Each structure stands twice: as C-alpha cells, then as structure tokens.
Length: 160
Image (cartoon, rainbow, N blue to C red; front, top):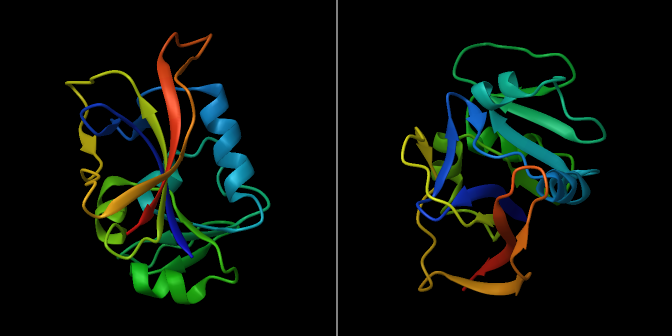
C-alpha cells in the first residue's frame, strides 16, 4: 500500500525554505508511529532537512536525479524505482512537494494533518484533495497544540 503522509494548511501549504511550517508534537508522534517499521520515500531536499539524517527503524529511500548516496539510505532515480526498492508492503511518501505531486495519482491512502491556518508566504504546496477522488475514513476532533497554539486535526482518506 502506498500512503502519503503530510501536514498542510487550509490553503494546502506544506513548507517554506525547505522547512515544516508548524511543529506540532502530536503530528510528529503520529508520523513516527505510522512510519516506524515501514518504508519512507522522500526527495533529496526533504532528506537533507532531517535534523539527524535517516529516520531510525525505517527503510529510508531518497529519490535524487544525481548519483547521491546518503548514509543509512537506499537511493533511487525515480519514484517507480523507489517503490521497487521497498522491502515493506507499506510505503509512506513523506515529501517534498514534487514527490507528493508525482505520487498523488498512485497513492492508495492519505494520512493528513489538517492545520487550521493559512500561510501566504509558503513556497511548497500539496495538491488539492478532491471529494470526487477521496473519501474520509477517519477524522479526529480539532485540537490545539499547546506549544504552537495552532489548531489541527488528523484525517485519513482512501481513494474511491
């Protein structure tokens, strides 16, 4: 199964200057819980933005058009190659923007953290999620993060 995991705002903003827009503790914990033991696929810039390099207890696959090789990762030149390299049945696409766009049509599910905010100066956006293509499987109540004071909820979608 191919899942996309992402946090986006009301205007589908996901990043600025190769960084997350918000740090929500529960979102990071959910990300870890869902992806641990599985494969995570990301672009080079997303990998380089990780503070400690490869994510532990996961197969990390980095997509790069150059012949880059990063410590504790597998390298692929395309999304299709990354999927073929996966040693797990559960593959999580974790960014960035161009990888999300490429993976959007092949994903089986979306694991979204919806953030109740608009970020006008973001430079990276997620494709719009259409009710014609996706159905909500589960949605949490809106909660406010204590540290960032931002309101968010978790929403899981599956392709219709």
